[in-house]
Length: 253
Ligand code: HEC
Ligand code: HEC
Ligand code: HEC
Ligand code: HEC
Image 1 (cartoon, rainbow, N blue to C red):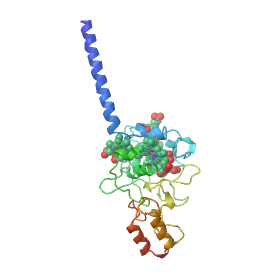
Image 2: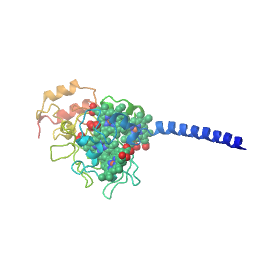
Image 3: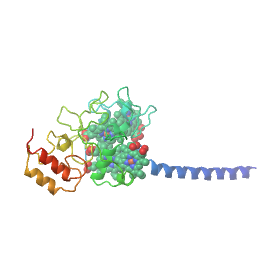
Image 4: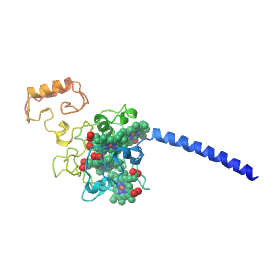
């Protein structure tokens, strides 16, 4: 009788181990990065630590504090956390003024029909040479330009208000020393350096006049993606950008 129970138990244990292994395999592949601690932390460290792969220095060496601290972004807890404390990249409790779209409410980039989905965040990784995001998200569309407000920007639930970070009164940057906010659209050009943020986007060289120098800059970046030469922000420097220069010819208005 006792032997029989032991054997049954062994079968039970073996079966459960098998189920757990299969679950881990399925969850591991289909839901990579569904939460910050499912892989983002491999490169970015614990959310309560100051590790940054690009060398950003966070106030108090703490990403959580930088996001939620009242002297910093002052982001409402429910922009990131769900009702039961759970934390997903693309869903959260939300507030009376904001939908619960989680981290992608700031680190997203809306595109038609799909909503805030983190497409700009992934493009930033891909542009800076981190290939892993593109392996699963290879059919991402082009993110909207830097100048378009992400869902949570400029709302009562946070101090973050301007993706173009146009000076000290427009808050997007609390890290120490780099004066950089976010590269929201993923072209690796930040804030005011991004031509999307300029009042005069066809002024590629930034000398306040649209002239032959801008034409030459376009030609030498021909076929490339991103960067100030990609004036219309469609991800490729081509004849459309050339036409933008010609139609804006002369001093910046
Ligand atoms: C394989 C390593 C790796 C993984 C995994 C990774 N990142 Fe990154 N991430 C980087 C590096 C490196 C940079 C800095 C690139 C640069 O700007 O030069 C970066 C930059 C960023 C930035 C700053 C972008 C900016 O505008 O300056 C954010 C935000 C970010 N990652 C969020 C995430 C999130 C969220 C995840 C999980 C979905 C994640 N990362 C996963 C390596 C990684
Ligand atoms: C920017 C998004 C964000 C905001 C805003 C935010 N949190 Fe968090 N919080 C996180 C992340 C990410 C973690 C790490 C857990 C994880 O990765 O699953 C976390 C973890 C925690 C933990 C667990 C600590 C631990 O060691 O396990 C507590 C408690 C917490 N947050 C409280 C708060 C409170 C209270 C607020 C509002 C004042 C707040 N958080 C605002 C993102 C946020
Ligand atoms: C192993 C495949 C895989 C890799 C690698 C991967 N993702 Fe994902 N990611 C997914 C899947 C699957 C979803 C869920 C998509 C859905 O719900 O439609 C997702 C969702 C997301 C979301 C939430 C938005 C949404 O649409 O649900 C973000 C943000 C995200 N990924 C960012 C990244 C970043 C940044 C990287 C690179 C560091 C990355 N992913 C790499 C498979 C992957
Ligand atoms: C209210 C807007 C907002 C929300 C919501 C938000 N972030 Fe951020 N996050 C920012 C801004 C702005 C920065 C850049 C701050 C700076 O550069 O000083 C940043 C920086 C970061 C960085 C640092 C990147 C680096 O340089 O290494 C990481 C990682 C990050 N966020 C992850 C997350 C995760 C994960 C969530 C959700 C749990 C989240 N963020 C939610 C606005 C937000």
